[in-house]
Length: 453
Ligand code: ATP
Figure (cartoon, helix red, strand yellow):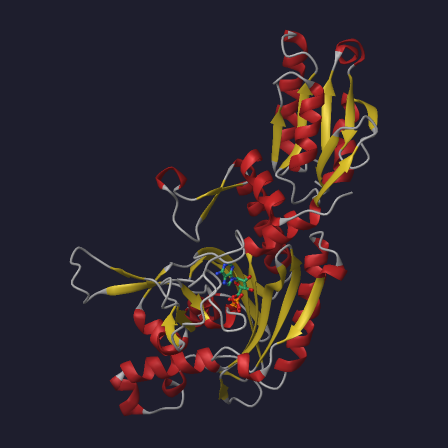
């Protein structure tokens, strides 16, 4: 088995339709990618697995889906307008721009010159204008994280559901950052998706929950097929903490380009609910005048025993969908030499993440009866399997197997001449390449063991 590079993954993604460069026919746009027919399936399976573990399998978490365009006041009070920036350095010789913490030995990564400017802060948020007049008076930000709309909806969710602490709000959605140097394929991009949980706890219980969520999230990534040895825990030092964080643990993954952050788990304390409470009170003159305890703590909740109002603390596991996708692909990819001297590319992706769950292949594409049997099998499997079942009617069975190994299809079912006689089909296992003869009556229970439906 040969080790592989990022180029091998990029080439597979393009060849088989996982990921394309965005706007490619017009020369692309840096830091943006599009997910193709297989990519959209894998990505959606990853998001489904996260949602299932967060929202469906627990009774203390609700989901939301909020708008991307964000009122600037939200990001003013959250601190992003003032502090969500990276240090930018210009090379005076070749005019390229870099994040200063990505520069090694004080030299421009493009031309090697040491003639660099001093770092200056560069805000990463994208702005757009809202409404028909583009005079700058009404603008909105594209959200840089999904988290803020969880905080701004905190009361709405609390008031419309029967929860008390600890409880969480989960969201999956796009986030936008004007990264100075997008790079390493889909690892650092300007438009990406996050899977974020804000888990609200009583102050004083935050450190216990921070530990608990770190363990849960490391285990979850392993359940998605990532080897423990390829994950690392990094305790972010105080001087590197984001403005809202009291402590952050990064789950790092060994990507082909190096070991970098896959997910961050931050203890955001009551920073955000506190800031938005201040925002509410600044804007609400009446509240200032009446000054009752409740109106001065808009996003606070009441302790049922002591009757005191307090702001919950928040633990935030925040994972990147695209970085997760890349890690899963990297983990599953291998190349091997078969006995006949041919190369086999294999994606040993977990069945629940596989973009194609089952490929149904008629042995002879011109045999009408065989094709009809295959079509009807595809239809009946599609009714029970949660994910895509593919009818492969392109001929050449060997090519079909090779392709499906390469895209990670756990099982291929071949309808052949014997099927027409005795209603049995061949089921080929991706990893072992073993083939079993299974009666069509039993095919669903056979597949049930693989897909758990
Ligand atoms: P980095 O230090 O790598 O820039 P970050 O610490 O700024 O990342 P967070 O603000 O913690 O990232 O965001 C939470 C998650 O969102 C990250 O763990 C990562 O998976 C994802 N993410 C952040 N920025 C990007 C990006 N530019 N491209 C793809 N995913 C990203």
